[in-house]
Amino acid sequence: MGRLLLRLEDFRLLPIFVVVSMAIGVGVGNALRISDFALTPPIDALKAIAAGTFRPTVPNAISLGVPVGLFAMMYPAMTNVRLGEVGAAVRSPRQLALVLLFNYAVAPFLMLGLANLFVADPELHTGLVLYGLAPCIAMVIIFTFLAKGNTPMALVFVALNSVVQMLLIPVYARVLIGNVRFDVSVVAESVVLYLGLPLLAGVLTRMAVVRRGGEAAMEALKPALNAVSILGLLFTLIVMFALKGDLILERPAIVAEMAIPMAFFFATMFFAVLLIGSRLRFRYEDAVAVAFNSTGRDFEIAIAIAITAFTPTVALATVVGPLIEVPVMLFLVWSAMRLRGRWFGPPQPGWTSVPGTAALAVDEE
Image (cartoon, rainbow, N blue to C red; front, side, top):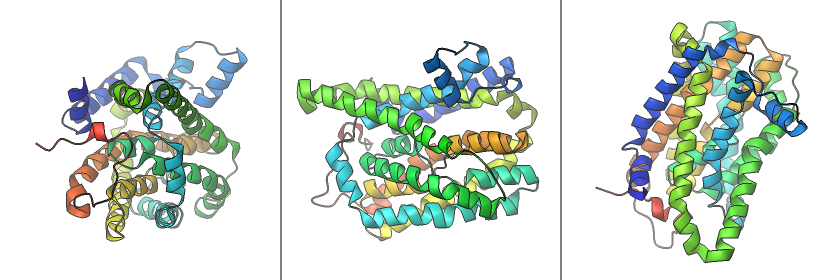
């Protein structure tokens, strides 16, 4: 199992499993005609479960797929977080400044420019601009984790972005889109669901395991946790592509129209930040955390705002977004690991590896 996981994370088998998962999702979505259902937002479904009013219908069950998959992805990465290292990441002003600069001074305007250049339909244009407003608060941690980056630093950036975007999203939406009204509390709810719960579970797991068996016990548990993370990633892909499987087959032009500017956006942001990090002599682990946190977009927030404040076509554009983002971000994980030696050189004396990555190191063959 351990060697299989190493090869999956080294992208020797993972691309095959990703493509298969996407195909399964499209097939399931097309067979069930999932786009015909009025899906319950995941947070509303969880609230219904807590209140005892949840009805186990097909659309309600489907709505829980994304948060379940994201939790399975995030939880193993969170078990690597040591609170002391989170404090050290906070004291990294250059890295923090670069994340803030690209997330709030570059990303929204780059996405607007790409939408102006590539998207003619006004509603798809609005959806694409909306998708570029908010930095990701969840999945960038797992991409940092897969790329052997600094997970505690990624967590600090995600926490910072979750606060800043609550203040700035309404401002950017008004400036770039127009008079938009939506409940800002949806951002706070998403932070708790997609970041808070996996973090709490991961930290508690680490504390319990280390208390009973020390770091050796934690290392012994990591192969199973890594398996959960990868399976969570594949399950999330199946669910995401199932949600719009019939649409992908019936209206592929929409996906293609969105794919070009979005892929250009992610590639430009990621490689620009990673290159700047190398020129600023960041460690590879830190530069990867900065690059992914500057690149990933908060599709959960974009979808929630689009559903409540815009037309179905705008919402459709935001739903198509993660279908493009996740595969592209996996390609960027692969790219970062291949560029490591060329842009960052061998580890320098005194550098320490990221917690938990020793067992996941890429085997050079």
